[in-house]
Amino acid sequence: MNFNQVTIKDIARELGISPSTVSRALKDHPDISPETKRLVNELAEKLNYQPNVVALSLRSSKTNTIGVIIPEIVHFFFSTIISGIEDVAYSAGYNIIITQSNESLAREKSDLKALFNSRVDGMLMSISRETVDFEHIENILSKGMPIVFFDRIYDTPGSSKVIVDDKVGAKEATLHLIEQGCKRIAHLEGPPNLHISKQRLEGYREALSEAGLPFDESLVALCPKGTTEEGKLATEKLLSLKTKPDAIFASNDPAAMGAMQAIRQAGLKIPKDIAIVGFSNWQLSSLMEPPLSSVDQPGYEMGQEAARILIRHIELKSKKKPEPAPEVKLLKTRLIVRESSVKK
Image 1 (spheres, helix red, strand yellow):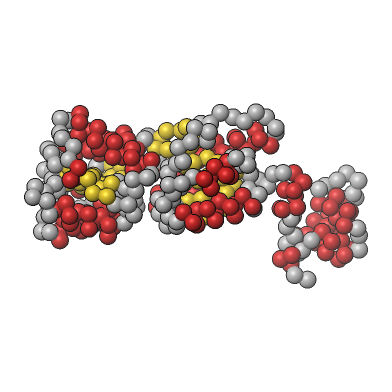
Image 2 (spheres, one colour):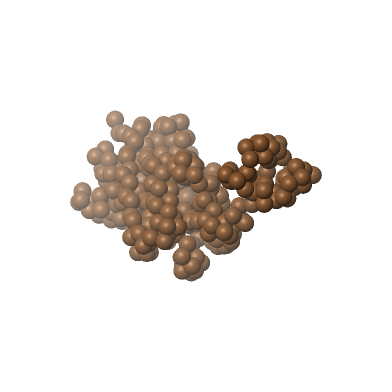
């Protein structure tokens, strides 16, 4: 017998009883004797019997499964989000299926379709950096699938979302550099189509304005992939300007780490010549030389909040209650000041 495909009929055949008796015994039906229940449950455990989730869902219209779409599993920030999602979901009796778009729109579309066809009760989603068209998401939303967006959001008024205050975080980081005496602060900008990139650029500009410093487009370098290599190349171009920047605020930590490489290779010192602040507080940030200042995002809390909101939507839907109003949860960031940005 193939134990990976054990069915109620297999258990019934082994015990010489009817499949309906096995089914009722597994459900602890009062009409079934304690001895029969004991025999059925012991054999089911021995054979590693698992209920057919698809068959059950067809009857109940609920699978107690949540789908998760993230850009990258290896990304430190997203891994902390997954931990938050799992803790809340499992405590509430839900399993999760995790997919990664790998920053590909095609993969994102495929993942969305696969999760929908797997009959998940709802989805948690952070869009890829390639996503500029949202027809595939609208198509799933139109079918009544609850989706809660987190971090990288599809900014539609009809869906719930959990985000950090990117604008305030970026503004705080830039003001910190200004307080250190920096006047030519460059910005390594993330993918321009993402809401988070727009908010971080806006926070940077707002800080400059409040301090009476001009916004100089030549000091904004695009890093659409946000990689270390991209940050290094962008910083090399900034260092070739007639008047070099005296500080850099990067939209993420890998880009900031690339900037540090370029500055050192140019024979300049951090933070004496150029101060640096990143965003996301990666686990390696504190291990850099010098340690990298960064804006910390509460990833674990973001995962928890997103899961809680989605489960509320799912439970109300399963009870045929009115659809809840969309929620927007805004989480605070925290600037972690380390040696890379403090001018002595």
